Length: 139
Ligand code: FES
Image (cartoon, rainbow, N blue to C red; front, side, top):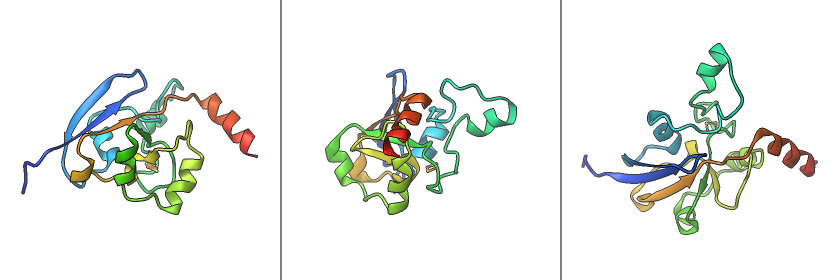
C-alpha cells in the first residue's frame, strides 16, 4: 500500500530538528540527501570546486559502508535496539567515526521500517581535531 508514511527526525549540528515523512525501505542517508540535511561531509572545513560538490551532501562512499560520513546517533536506545544489528563492516567503519556513541549507526545502513516510525537521530557535531585525538588514543 502506498501512502503509509513514517516519520524520522534529524537533529542537525545546530540543534535544529527536521521532521521528515519517509517511506518504508528508505535508508537514512538517502533521506538526508533528499532533504539537504548536512551530514559529516561539509562541516566547517571549506572545500573547493569539485570537492565541494562531491562532499557537500556527504555519504562519501554512496552507501557502500566504506566511509563514516553518514554517522548518525540514535537518540532513543529502545529504537536502536529495534534496528537490525550492525554488520562487522559497519562496526569497523563506526570505530573510525567522530564522536562514536553506544547508539551510533551508519545512516546508509539503517533502513526505515514500521517499527522505526518516529525515529530521532542526531548528527554528530565533533570537530575534525577531535577525531585526531580519538585516533591517537586508540593507537
Ligand atoms: Fe559511506 Fe554510509 S555513506 S558508510
